Image (cartoon, rainbow, N blue to C red; front, side, top):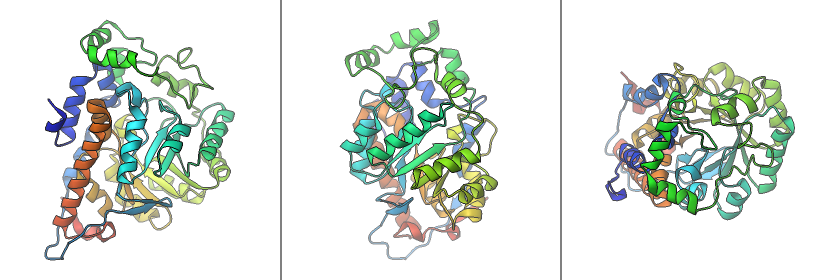
Length: 381
């Protein structure tokens, strides 16, 4: 299968599966427990139908939005995700380059494989820094100070990961950083030699946001262990309120799923929330993000920027989320499969297809700008 034969999310996923050793593909692809929430994240959109208007004279389509003070040319952004250079040696550099080309936001993760300083210096596009709350409070403050010094304007704290989700696919293959694979996992690496050659002939894998503070090759033997042993399960609203005050700018909580928590985010001065269940990778059996979107928008949408992620596979999914009141929509696996499939060229093709879908769907909906989408354009079955 060639990149030119990829026309949608499922095609990129298939090509990524062909390119990646099984343990790495399953790290991207998998969810927690029985993966019911992972599946529901996308299937939830099928219970909501679009209601188009015709003869509205849609000549030009303006896809721009403003979210958390950032002017974006698109209503979708590239969410912060971990370990990108493990999937393709270009990693965050490829993803940030495509985000810059399309004039949209890009996120660097605490578990990113390129430093936030390099990305901020090299690419001129709105950026967020996504971080986790560690037991080491000094590390948390140091991360925010680094982000501020880099010129990053939006801080995004992930709040749904105070312990690791039960990702059984990783347990079966022995996936960890550094690699400590079981026999089945090792064989899958041997069967994909091109990936291995790429991995050893390019820049050594590292986690520059954490390397100065945490030895990922020592006591922390897996990503699951990192979540469980290094992050602080006692994090509470008072801790977050202190961080919001310390940051003094655009501050977003990623992983909000209830109206009560959304209201608390407003109360402590956050400027944004991301309705997200971590792509179905944390609490299995939780509601899909889309199922929770409307009630959270209704409760706090006038007071805070409500952003949305988890399960997006199509332009129509984006339009449904925007019509319910989301200010912007985050893409995760959508671009990660494309990155794994073909690096920057893959991400660029995936984004080109997504933008084309959104523009076409906007015309078919009879809307010339994102702010024209509203609840009149959707019906639930």
